[in-house]
Image 1 (cartoon, rainbow, N blue to C red):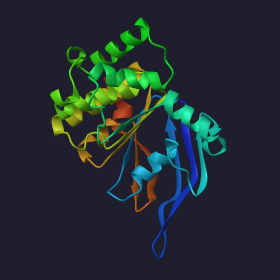
Image 2: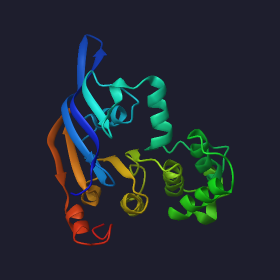
Image 3: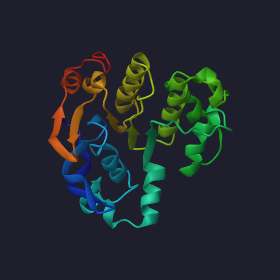
Image 4: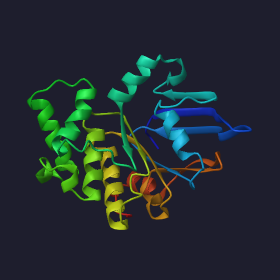
Length: 248
């Protein structure tokens, strides 16, 4: 693929102390994630997917090895630099939607922009409106989370994750609680965002029906890579001009 590498993971191991010894959650992981692509991180529960995602998202640190984002090593950043990176350059979407229940959809999306230091004003309001329209919820901006379905709440969470123009979105099992039709719709939305918003997305899933939607698949098993990374049919189709999501 022609895109540049955004993230490079080299020789990463993660060992946790457990009663009676140690548990190695990741074993010598070597991964490259290309800019403006949707990469699928697959594996069974306990395979190390979330651990790897937390390390890439600067929420955890490896026991050994390095993670580079645009050539900058995460391990050499200060805590303040890593926090700034998460707030300004990353967006997070989790299986548990975690919308603030006392805020409506507009306010939930706006909140991420405030955290990123984007000043209040018409430009910020317009970006919130545009993001809600992008996920098909332009008419639900004033609705509270309790007034929305699970799929709508997840789409608000996606709008919140992209509102501040991050370079990277980390989505951990974002479709696990959705039915197959909504899961396909959310995944197609991710595909479109990599092109329209120029966002790089790393998504974990164990749903085999969604595997072909990504540009690259990385598989983990018991903390180890099954292979370094496999370009999907979707990526090859997009290289020849096929529209994102046609294979869903």
